[in-house]
Structures are given as C-alpha cells and as structure tokens.
Length: 40
Image 1 (cartoon, rainbow, N blue to C red):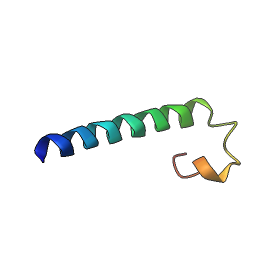
Image 2 (tube, rainbow, N blue to C red):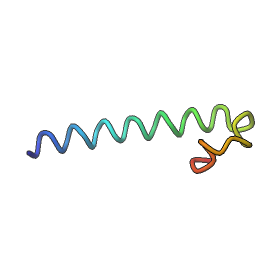
Image 3 (cartoon, rainbow, N blue to C red):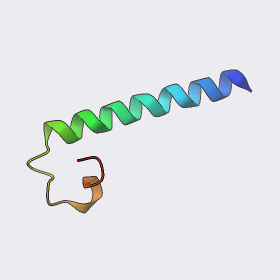
C-alpha cells in the first residue's frame, strides 16, 4: 500500500508542477479562461 500511495503522490506532484508551469507561461493568454483561473 505504501508503494502505491507514494507513486500516486509523486504523479500528483508532477501534474501539479506542470500545471503551474503552463499557467505561469501562458498566464496572460488564459487570464480570461475559467478552466485555469484557479491556478493563476
């Protein structure tokens, strides 16, 4: 169980980091889009 949970948490962190990087990179373009409004 610990291995599965650790893998899930690592994947979640990677997705979160990529999501923030995309948000910061295209912050001006997606400022008016509701789907990425939360991360900005």
